[in-house]
Length: 221
Image 1: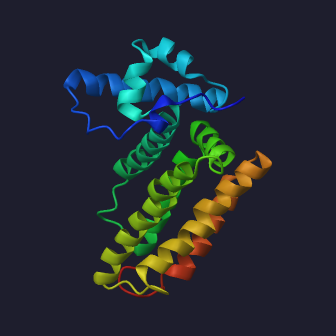
Image 2 (image 1 turned 180 degrees about the horizontal axis):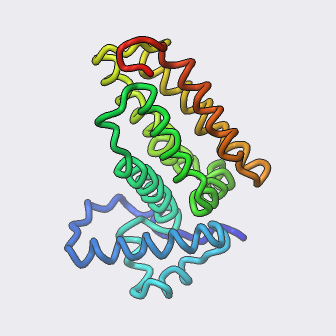
């Protein structure tokens, strides 16, 4: 299916839209409904007319809020990334954890969220469309893997300041942890359709934690 004509692409730049409360609610509704439709049918499987029909209103709303279907699609990706990250972070209480305990808790919290079927469908959509939409891949990487690594690095930095000995800088340790645990489990699940069992994931988390946090140091197990 060809991309739908988007008159906003050739239009002169518009001044920033001043959003009323009703406008904000309408924009949020469009994002929510469009997210469900894109996840179920993909980008090409949903027309702008179908989105507008499901949301009510007119195409003008989509053009005003997002610049067209392409802009709406990228905004949906940004929203879903933020929601997945926010959902996981708010469920984690690391205030009483040492470095190793915190990494264990972070790993299980993120894996629980990342392996949900809705998130797996989201990743399949990203990988299928990111080549056609470079902004899509950038939005996902910035709000997904990069934001997750920043969260882990922030935790490790606090632990290091409290005396924990790490195998490398907090930023490098966060990249190692993300690659060994989160990315490896996600890639295997997406490629095979089968998620590792709990024992395999726990062993992976234990190995990653042992490589990052020196035992016997302050803040370690």
